Image 1: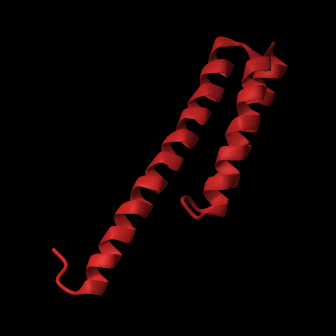
Image 2: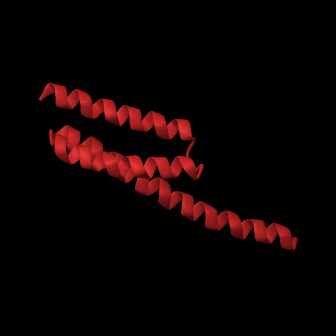
Length: 90
C-alpha cells in the first residue's frame, strides 16, 4: 500500500487508466473476433463491415498507446489479408 500522498494519487490514476485500457483492449479484441468469425463463416460482406469497425478500434488503441501503433497496423494488415484471401477463394 502506498504511504505518501503522491503515491496514493498515482495508485488511483493507475487504477483508472488500467480499467480504461482494459475496456479499450476488450472492445478491440471483440471486433477482431467478429471479423475472423465472419470470414470463417464465409460472409465476406459482414467481414468487411466488421473490419471497418475493427480498424477504428485498432487505430484508436494505437493512438492512445494502449497497444503499440505498429501492433495496430500489423493487426489491420493481417485482417485485411484474411478478407482478401477469403474473397479470392469464393
